[in-house]
Length: 285
Figure 1 (cartoon, rainbow, N blue to C red):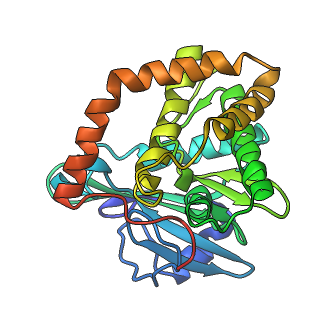
Figure 2: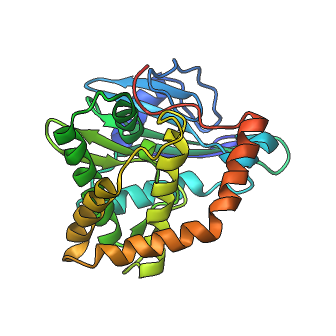
Figure 3: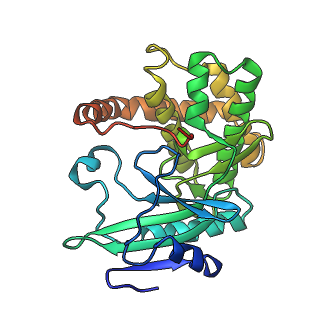
């Protein structure tokens, strides 16, 4: 659907619900805030038996200080819609996308939005890591969490998907059932086969995110032990399609971290000084 200022792609059955919420190509809606927390405020739309999450695209890191919600290209939400459909068709659990929108802002910039179905009764990886830091997760639960996380990332990589923002916040878990989901596919890429270098760089991103967001809660000590990381990598290797040498992946991750670690710690320091550090997880407030 084309409006005066933007474009809206949507599931045909969702059109009446979106229209009732005022969600149109020109961003005229006034949506209630979701009870989920994230980097930016999330909106909510009630849709019968479902609840939909309205996510407004934003820049992370230092770019947030230059214009958090302004983008030069309008295509990103529509690309994420396509990625979500392709992953779901491949048997990977990611929330169904209901609508994608790009609305022209001032100058040559755009404001981008995605509407997806909320996954109920789950917790994100960061919330569970916070429990680990508090000692609220017992050893058996921690082992199950690490195995589930490793298997999820392994299945993503086996499908040829490299997540552009592979962080604990973007992995959802239902501990009682062992079910897992992946969120926020923006910027990811899906290819026939991921090379070892791409896989290991993606694993490093996840490892770095865990270190960054838990180092203070763990009083400056590593939150996860080498045995924990080994458990994750073994589950990852099995889901990848076999039992590859987890030590090779671990050595590669350590080597990449030595090369770039100082730079990333400097960026973290600058983010904190500029007030653009991470604000929260996708766990209900």
